[in-house]
Structures are given as C-alpha cells and as structure tokens.
Length: 252
Ligand code: NDP
Image 1: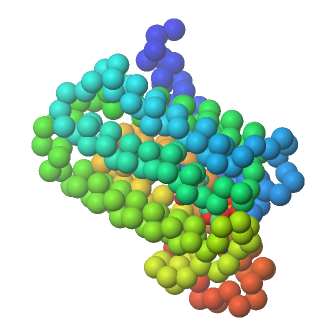
Image 2 (image 1 turned 180 degrees about the horizontal axis):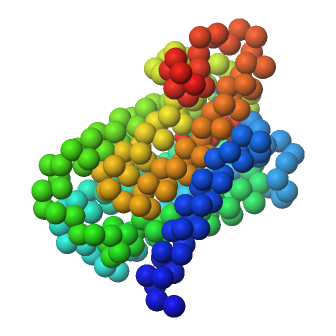
C-alpha cells in the first residue's frame, strides 16, 4: 500500500468518525473535568494527561515539516499558527491549571493522544506533501486573510476565557464559581467558541480537507459539551444569569 492510499483511507475514516461523533456526544458526555467523577476507568494526573494527549500535535506537525520542508511562505504561516496554539495547549495550559485539582481517565488521555497523532499527521502531510501547492498570491487572497483573522480572534477569545476560569480558583480549591467578564456576559463557554473559530479559520486559510475535518471534529466535541456545561451551571447555581446562552450569543 502506498502512503497516499493510507492517507486517503485515514482521512475518510476520520471524516466519517467526526460526523458520527457530533450527535453521539449529545447522549454521551466525555468523563473528564466536572462531568468525570468516578467514570471512565483507571485515572491519572490531569496535568500529565493534558501534556500526553496534546503534545503529539506540535511534534508530529513539526516532524512533517522537517521531513519535507514546503516551498513558499503560506505553509510556514500555517505552521506558525498551529504551533502557537499547540505549544500553549500542550505545555503552558496544563501547567497553569490548578494541579491538585483533578485526575482524568487514562482512556480519555489515550483516546485524545490517538486523535492528535492522526490529526497532526493528516494536516502535516497535507500541508507539506499531499495538498496542492498554493499560489504565491494566496497570502493576499480573501480565504487566507479572513481565515487568519478568524484564527487570531478565536485564539484571543479562547485564551482570555480560559484565563478567566483559571483565576476563579485559589490554590488548592477544587470547586466551581460563576465566571464573569468578556464574552461570559453572553455565553457559558467562550473558550469553546474561541476554539471552534480558530479551527474554522485555519480550514479557511489553508483551504484544506484535513483542516476542514478537524474543524468538524472540534465542533463535534465542543458544541454538545457547551450545552452540557450550560445545563450543569443552571442546575448548580439558581442565580445563574438567565440571559446567558451556551455557546453563541443570543442564539444557542
Ligand atoms: P473547561 O471549561 O471545562 O475547563 C477549563 C479549566 O477551567 C479546567 O481546569 C476547569 O477545572 C476550570 N474551570 C472550568 N469552569 C470553572 C468554574 N466555573 N470555576 C472554576 N474553575 C473552572 O474546559 P475543558 O477542560 O473541556 O477544555 C480546556 C481547553 O481545551 C479549552 O480551551 C477547550 O477549548 C480545549 N479543548 C479543545 C478540544 C478540541 O476538540 N479542539 C476538546 C476539548 C477541549 P476542572 O478540570 O476541575 O473542571
């Protein structure tokens, strides 16, 4: 079997799994964080789990770029966006979380590790080998400019929203409070909204199938979870702001 055949097969399986996961996660809530107590089998440190599951993304993408350095500037812009997100997600975010707080199921960490290996490989090989070579003027095309702006806006929203959450707890605390400020005025999960915008922007800027599939995966994971978080806040806090929606201001 050629690598191209393997790549295409993996991309199809990955795309079908993303579409199937979307409705499934309205019925099954991934057992980590506030929704995880006691479920999901053997557990590990959440800090180690986050590093283990997210680190393959920047590493695999970097390996792809080392093995087949692409010509032209556009792929290197995509490389920089990806690494900016994932170096933060894999190595800064886990260490900034309150470490004493929680454990996570080993099964969740291993599942996400496998996901990130596939996703890093599909996106890395598309950008360096299997995708079409982007024209020199792609850097001034509307999909590129709109996509990069969307990615940056999403990154800023996600970063700010996660910072607000991280500051809600004092060292050693494990409980939950109602977050306020920024997009929390209107929605429960601005961190998830920011993450979805980032990968929709990345798909637009790269005009690539693997990036589109990744954007669908991100929405499949986070849209149902935002709804579950929202219902959880409403049940736990009788004074939860009534006008706040789950993910999209005024709509959802
Ligand atoms: P959450 O919003 O559930 O939690 C983020 C952190 O904030 C956790 O440490 C959590 O603690 C803490 N926290 C959350 N709410 C409160 C509160 N009300 N009071 C005090 N502390 C709080 O996000 P996730 O853990 O699901 O995700 C973390 C990041 O990873 C997000 O930016 C998300 O976008 C991204 N992500 C991306 C995915 C993708 O498919 N691309 C999939 C999943 C996540 P605790 O753990 O104890 O609940």
